[in-house]
Image 1 (cartoon, chains in turn green, red, brown):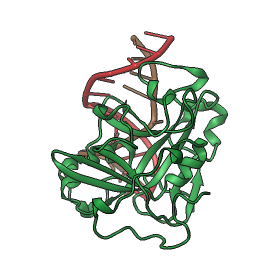
Image 2 (cartoon, protein in one colour):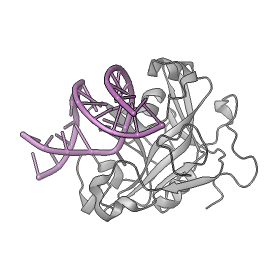
Image 3 (cartoon, chains in turn green, purple, red):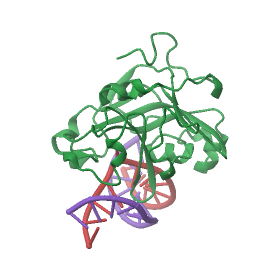
Image 4 (cartoon, chains in turn purple, yellow, cyan):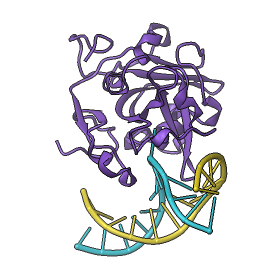
Length: 220
DNA sequence: GAATAGATTGTCT
DNA sequence: GACAATCTATTCT
């Protein structure tokens, strides 16, 4: 869809080791585009979080686009603007965090211009070595393959929470999104938005085909 | 593998 | 007071 990811070279293989110094943060222009384009191109990019506990990173393999105010599945549906979703209305490249069911955090990337309440929900990442810190945070062995296969799980593994609300992915030394590679991208309706009327059916979930970390198994 | 229930709390009506 | 862009354990088949 653009030249920001996978220009046709290496496909489908995450690096076997993570070298933070080799990671190139995506420019603001990446986020300052229509949310469906950013969502599609976000597949394969690498989330990196550096904290006092250490570094943790994952390759994005599943996202969903939310496009208020017309999209009834979005928190910004019908132009609703509250303290919680304020970040959705702000500049592209910033982070929107919210709490689900009182227990799980969700990590979102704000896209489009200021005043366009659009965002990309990151639903799953493929964890990149070293896995030990992420496994500790999740309280399970990495071999189980369930470290980061869901919105709440990846936040727990990467150490993301409400303290990252509004962070600028283009300027934060702590939290960044970097260029990566991806395999073939599939699309499907979004997950768990039954309340959204006719918007339920829109194929606004994007995922890497065949990747074991995709949270809800697609039909293909 | 699929279905179910319970957890748990900030946010909005 | 209701509910949520979910996760886990448990109980089936």
